[in-house]
Length: 398
Ligand code: CTP
Image 1 (cartoon, rainbow, N blue to C red):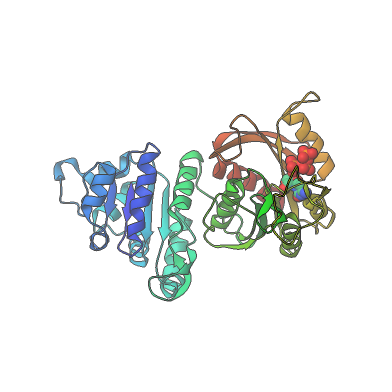
Image 2: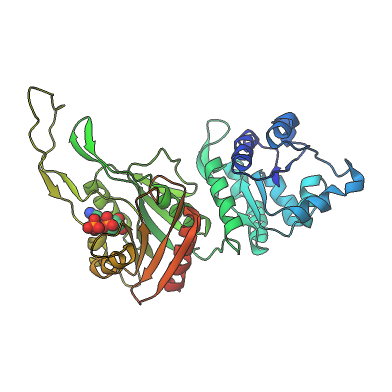
């Protein structure tokens, strides 16, 4: 079920709906009457292929509010306005959406969107807490430009982000716990780019998706998150996350050392270039005649090993290892060696190559602990892998 409440962000629900149907889900859209002031019922009917009603007096013999609630595997309300959150928190049933929310027994995800003042009002805060205490997932909104010229928290998170977290709720047996409230975590993501001249660089195929999923999931579990982002596949900044954009490994190193002070957990998911050109040419290297001069490279610092060396008491440090396996051993063997060599508390080992891990939506691997624990991370979304990792981090922090 996709509930749509009456806010200007209602237009983004059409994209969300499209993402759900294109990934194979059957979606019944339940807009409020106010939502239809913003987006016509025909849009939702055409994109979902299902009828759209706002009240409980259509198709009465089918008792739709009961049927829809009982049949749903997941309810997503996007946007959830202050009014909708208030009505849901109070258990009102004055339209089809709120009535169906009362009959649904599946996970429920609210994606709020409203002006900052409304989001921060004690009445809304109390409604959000009440809904969360009952097990609903109420996303933190994004910060940024609102309807007019004003900016602040209250923007609807990017539809891709809502879709990712919705899928996570379907994959995870339990709702997202708010177990990182009061924690500060730092995540690195994406690939670094090592400049050769003003227009060329050495890069890698990291999309940044795994690191962004880690940041998103941590923020929605209540953590204060700093994301140090290298180059990514044009990903939108996650909602409720402080993002520091960097280019090279040396810039990432500086940003990470600054960000990890006082942090409870640090996750290096970035694909840091191991080497950089010895010298950066200040002008575009011209083709000239004959073969170019060989590239002379030097090794970049290992940021993860530096962070382990500077680790504060109680800080949990996590690394990633992308391994293909070779004559000397399989990916897991290399992962075990890397865990010891890097000195991290946890290491996520991904098998890469042959369409695995890089530039794809899903991920699988192993989670190795310095305490000798080894957990298989079955195939699932990058958000699911992120969620398993935060489970392990949260357990170590407590
Ligand atoms: N890493 C880092 N700084 C580097 C290289 C890697 O912080 N200069 C981090 C990565 O972010 C990752 C972990 O180290 O968390 C392992 O990265 P990986 O590329 O698998 O390992 P390498 O140390 O580069 O070893 P190798 O390439 O020999 O497998």
